[in-house]
Amino acid sequence: MELNIASLSGKTIRLVLLSHAHLAGLQQAVKDGNLWELWFTVVPTPEDMHQEITRRLALYQQGSMLPFTVICQKTNNILGMTTYMNIDHAQNRLEIGSTWYAKSVQGSAVNAECKLLLLAHAFEVLKCIAVEFRAHRLNLISRKAIEAIGAKLDGILRNHRRMANGTLRDTCVYSILDSEWPAVKAHLQQKLKQKMAISDMTVTR
Image (tube, rainbow, N blue to C red; front, side, top):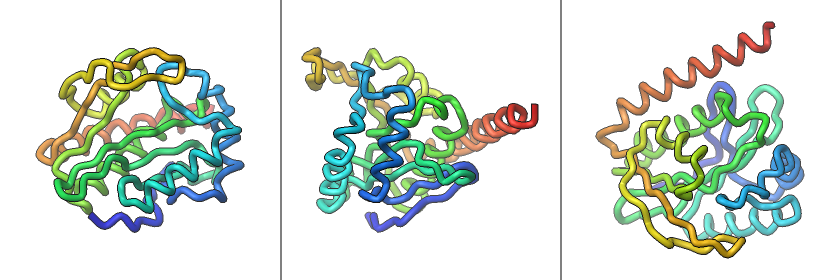
């Protein structure tokens, strides 16, 4: 799969290849909601952000990850991070994950458009046969968001990994197949249109 993508652009956001130049903006975004305090997910602290960028870029160089910075089209503000990860070049499969957004844009059109851009590129350009999503069994917000996209639960990996606080994580594995993409795409496009309409109404009030 060809992973040399500079950016993916939509109406509300653009996804740009992660860079150390994004450090200050990412540190500011992660402070919006103190996202690193959520025990059931892994989000870098402002102090660890430089190290996290370096880690993701190292995996990019190895060909197993394609990391993006999420940027607002209107303001150019940095909103968060997302990635193609666990890339299986032989089988044309990958996972969309290691995603976080500033709290102020959670529930907005950002996630819907981010997933639409990433899934469209994965299925229509990279010709993936399946795209995975993973979440902590108790991360009900992320699980609900993944299910709202149209992904189906494949199963649960029990005691899959140890979290920073020492607890063991059961990982829920979801996927979308290439045959399911046309319906999921239509659903996401409609979802995005509704989210944008709500945003426009809020601005004009």
